[in-house]
Amino acid sequence: MLKFIFGLITGGIIVWVVLKRKLDSRFRGNDRVINPEQQRQKRENVEKIWEMARSKGEIANDDVERALGVSNATAERYLQELELQGRLEQVGRTGVKVIYKPKI
Image (cartoon, rainbow, N blue to C red; front, side):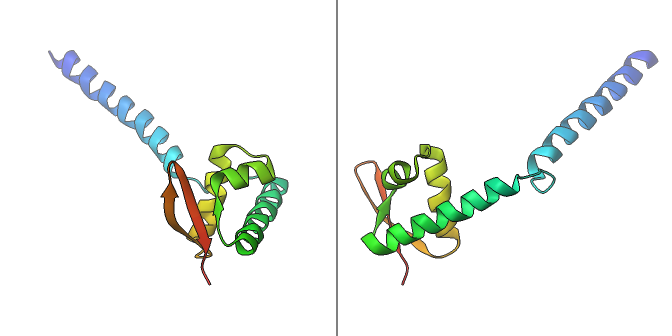
């Protein structure tokens, strides 16, 4: 009986340590190394989107995908970045398309 209890406690500790490491690595974004070239490209793309939004008066995900040749997910991230920066605001949907307008 004592071996069984000891085994349960030991097993529980091992599971806890493994899960804690896995969860910690998920929530720790700061230890990832980001390629400086990718960072530069992202900044350039975000600025291009900002200029397009200002010149057209509005922009949608599809516009970003076509103009930059990026995936749907990447276009969404770029638009969300500008929204977080307070430069764009989401103003509505036309069907499934989300429209963003520049904040002036």
